[in-house]
Amino acid sequence: MTEEKIAVVTGSSSGIGLLTTVELARNGYRVVATMRDLGRSGKLEEAAQKAGVRDRLDLRRVDITEFDSLPGAVEAIVRDHGRIDLLVNNAGFSSAGFVEDTQLHELRHQMETNFFGNVAMTKAALPVMREQRSGHIVQVTSVAGRAAAPMLSSYAASKFALEGWSEALRIEVHSLGIRVVLVEPGSYDTDIWERNLVIGKQALDPSSPNKERSQRFAEFVRSQANKRRDPGEIARLIARVANDPNPRLRYLIGPDARMQTWLRALTPWRIYERIVARATKID
Ligand SMILES: NC(=O)c1ccc[n+]([C@@H]2O[C@H](COP(=O)([O-])OP(=O)(O)OC[C@H]3O[C@@H](n4cnc5c(N)ncnc54)[C@H](OP(=O)(O)O)[C@@H]3O)[C@@H](O)[C@H]2O)c1
Image (cartoon, rainbow, N blue to C red; front, top):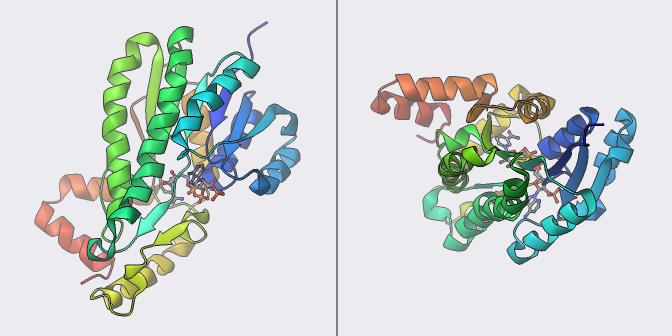
């Protein structure tokens, strides 16, 4: 009998994390679905029930910014399930505002979640994967980890950092049988655009010199809402990557993500930056 595969997903209460949890369970994984507030598990439980996989989930509370608690949380998972075959570092949020309007503590908060939180979760999982001589680590980064947009400097910084860190890690652990993968979505319809969007306090202040530009950018973002895609696409991609013994380093997903990276690679920088400034209406 083959051993049951164990997956751990962060940020399972919503969006990509929720759908990935259900998709992995459908693919035969036992999924440790973690979230920072177990009071928000209702949507996941409902979706899992509907898909007939509720009994494949183990719900646990994990806030990825509570760094000191993470090794203990991962040890408890290994104690109860015996192993970890897949870690999906999905939890994250987006912080918006012009650099001039962003305070250092706001940038730090963004980095603590999107970068240090994912780093700490990964470091907690590495010992068991090293011992097993196997394991996949999927980092849900973003096209913003390849090409930065104005107003999203903090978010881009956190994703660029995670991409660079993960590139190095991938090479370090390949010979141990551990595979590190970057999944880089474009725009998908989740709570990241509203409920979990953090707008810098100063950006909203009427005295901000960027007030009008911020408003125009916000209108641009709203105008794109109906173009956002079904995040189920990402969940299916992650399940596919998880089952691939030799996955690539990067998986860009979404036509907008492909278009943006293609433009950035092929267009001279001076032209590219004009296109971005005009498209996002900040000039
Ligand atoms: N949607 C997109 O267009 C898009 C594009 C590129 C990349 N991404 C990336 O995809 C990932 C998932 O985002 P999403 O789009 O699915 O947005 P979402 O619906 O807002 O989900 C974000 C998840 O992260 C959780 N979370 C936030 N901070 C956390 C913390 N400190 N500890 C534990 N969990 C935390 C949230 O928990 P709560 O439910 O408690 O808030 C939620 O479960 C993020 O890393 C994001 O950067 C999304």
